[in-house]
Length: 235
Length: 82
Image 1 (cartoon, rainbow over the protein chains, first blue to last red):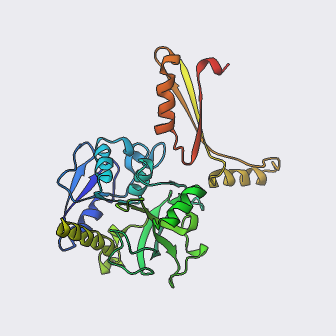
Image 2 (cartoon, each protein chain N blue to C red):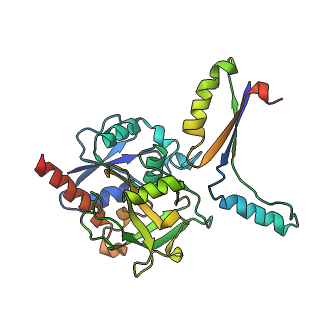
């Protein structure tokens, strides 16, 4: 399966994403520059972390208008898998592909740490390889990762089981102390209503090798791979 | 012609920066600061008739200069700024 890693000016996890994806059997991956206008021929799209356009104005606000984004929106609407990591998550929210927004961490500190997240739903192309309650150890590194959504959006997210990951402690309890950035309801990652677009603040791309401290991130990419393979077999 | 855009965080959105600044004001003995909100201020130098540009400017305020999920904006056209 072919995964496109979009490069914006200021992306800095594009290489991490490419290396992580290529380390997984069955995934081919390459970069696509943000000035490109087509993503046909790719099975999945990855918006990597970084500081696109220097985070000017708001994180992701300018990247959202890059030429490639028109195609990302089109492909997302046609059902293609899209994952946005960190700055990629911010871009997806700015583009309106995911509800809510990411604002300054409640502590005002840039957090660079290892966190534990709990898989809330297995019914998604991004978590289908894991049982509900599985714990993923993933790194975070962000200054604007506090997820915000108004109450109506929040109850919709919960009703439709769109919250895929929540920050939790080492035993899997979703408690305020385990929340690194003040995100509402400890939300670490959400998908859209159609379940083909996923955004998360933690970095699965930096956790695909044991020697990096965790290989749990690979389970997200493996889930995507399995779901793509199932779709292809059904077609 | 100069138009001004003022972007502020919505009432319902927590503003930790504003809270930190208010805290500093209190430390400096200014106890009257009940709340501080930090936003963004833009000055846009325009060519041509501002009235003609206004609809497009409003569109830009909504789509680019502010994020309606978390922010409100105010567009001040030259004739309103007196």
